[in-house]
Image (tube, rainbow, N blue to C red):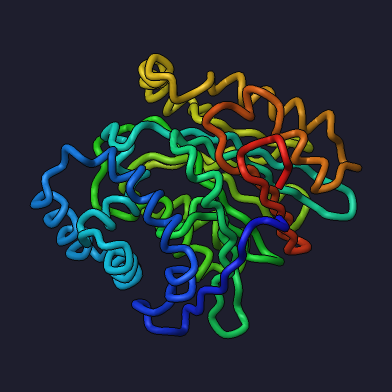
Length: 334
């Protein structure tokens, strides 16, 4: 944490100005990261990017003002910036390359439920670009672990209430312009005050594409994995002391969607999802209820949970509001 910059994003300010401090300080790393990701879209004509941005707005896409500010700052088109912020949805078209993650929940004495995760993306520069953002509106604040240029949330927490992380899920259909999963996470953190309300929003809101949400609350038993397709959901509750999720469906209704994972394995962008989930679940059980947040970084270092695509590791404790963030590289720690 000591080496990871922290920024405050004032949600009460003009959307076009909210990221000004981040832009002024992080323009160089954001530009490098955008160029890395944009390489995945190099075959997409600019006119298609323009149409994509227009459709995103026409269908009520959120945070367009913020995306536009980043586009201007980085010298890219609005279409390019919009596509970059929709990278999760576009990954279900194999553009960009496919993503991965492993997530778990553990009960820890004195802390309550603790939510841990690794983020695995085939973009090594995300490691050094990792930042912590504190979104504030009046007296309300939630935190997000992200990178400059990303206005949606893949991993976040409303202190005193709940945390949410996203895991890539095999697609059930082509993406639409309904709510993108990462945009829904931010919208939920901005508007839902309780674990129950967050679960309801993540479970019931029509989505653009499939995803796994892991949600962790403050009280015993308040944790679940929500397996989502665009119109259906299955909620897998925490039944013991630990819960783990990688990138495969567990609910019988969705098992057929796992067939795409065989193709993913061939491309080399995922370790076996079942092995990662099993490894993390076992490591959390071994860590037990007396571990500390710092010790959980070692849990996240175990292969294949930690692998060559791991760019971020983190732990959230919703009850206390504590968060720990470690970049992907094991050597050197945070």
